[in-house]
Length: 309
Ligand SMILES: C[S@@+](CC[C@H](N)C(=O)[O-])C[C@H]1O[C@@H](n2cnc3c(N)ncnc32)[C@H](O)[C@@H]1O
Image (cartoon, rainbow, N blue to C red; front, side, top):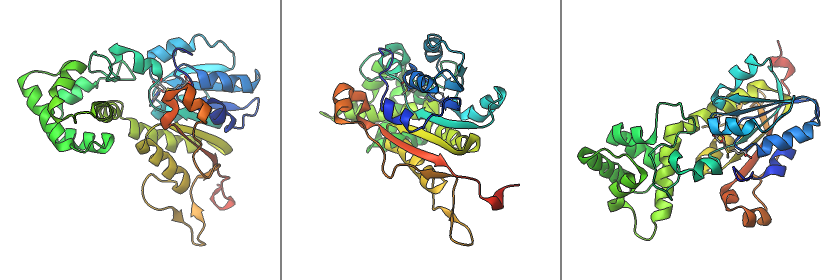
């Protein structure tokens, strides 16, 4: 529990409507809270494949000993490839609890938190070549402007990008303290925490290519889910949630749902809950990290007879 306190645990796992003996995937193992409950509901039958790209999560997974459990140290954007490797072509349910774990966030050396000094890192996968330091010191001003604006919804993104570039022209920006100092001139007084959280969110999304990875995972999820199989996704900011919501309701990330000649919607998923599920007052009180969580649940549609080969 000290590694990560699971959010919307019961709600997101119950949403999978687990059939003992079924095949399930947790694409974000973290500290394994959701995986442990899925395994419990499997009642010693079936199989759970849990993905995480972080070696720290991999170490945590070694504590979960079960014949019904397989840990996959990989980015969930390769979901289909790894499942195929393990001989699991079709699965009954997929759970995703997006973002970073408390362990990642609370470990100063990982560079995710504005609260500590540490390296400008922010990589969930420590073997990945792109760190926040690389982004901040090498990206063109225009690219930085776009990232801060789009991913952080930072209001003065253009000024911020300019400030970063002029600071790095004097001296390389190495650490979180260096970075905070470099952008002090455009950090609004009295709103430092909120502003820095937005700026860090933007860098984190870029470093981990979070939105593209999510899109790729969702597209593969519908390919590997059996008809009637469940998808349960917890997101923590509006950019992620919008992608999940659009994909469930429209079968695409942008634009309108396609319709056939008869006006029937062509999309692979049906929403199970009309509105997103949010944490109870009790959970909000007990776990501040749950405050922005939104759970969306969908079910894979039956393939229409006309599309079956
Ligand atoms: C919020 S935590 C999950 C916590 C977990 N549900 C629990 O209860 O302990 C998110 C985890 O997903 C992992 N993660 C995020 N994006 C990923 C991706 N694209 N591929 C693989 N793992 C990812 C992170 O490394 C982190 O450990």
